[in-house]
Length: 301
Ligand code: GLU
Image (tube, rainbow, N blue to C red):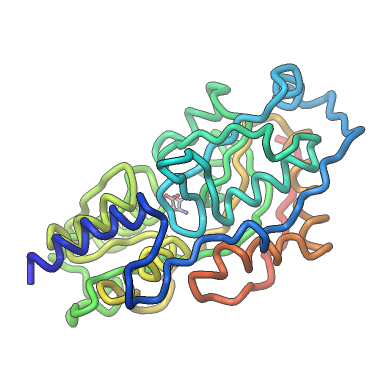
């Protein structure tokens, strides 16, 4: 049994590396380039009040923070270095409205725990990577959006019978990413769970498949992607037990950039681009396109 799991973990790594499915299982469906929206790049766009935008314009490209190991959301092809997924499409559609062609975006992988520092230090212009908007984080960074509503879930091995929701986690080893809201919620609300933290959820998934942990917890949108890649090995259990509105992180105080992002997002939701991008990426993990949540557009801060 354990050998099978070790093999499954290796397979997951191989799948990620090859970007393709194993024979006999549903093919691992990556975004098909022809299904992705084409983004109209704004030609006479100006945002003089945004320090971030001015800097990017001088540089001639945007630097955007993202994830690289979250199927259908933010994934980096190890061979080509190309990023794909729903978050990546959101980053591109916004970039186009800000006057940057998608090929003028440089993506940089930033782990959950390092997002605020990366924005504060000016390492990135904005961040699109399953980034929950909340009041604590708003003290450190700004948020455009939200552009999607996720909820915390649990991923277990397919043959797991003891865990069907967070109430069953007492004494169980639960893995999540350091600095994430799902990690903090387990710590606060389910203190009898044995929490293990890593930089990324893919390390947690490897640990699940090799019996090092009993469950992985983070947003359902992320977990569905892992489960869809290895449906014979893993399943989601229970109902979502939080609300995780995904925002576009910007440097705090750059209200001009934040409002421009909100305007861009509103326009792309209205003209169907958002849905097209969803259907070609995150929609492939099996959940039909929801209605996007209302954009927050909180006052300048
Ligand atoms: N949305 C959650 C968060 O922002 C979990 C996913 C992640 O770590 O990116 O903390």
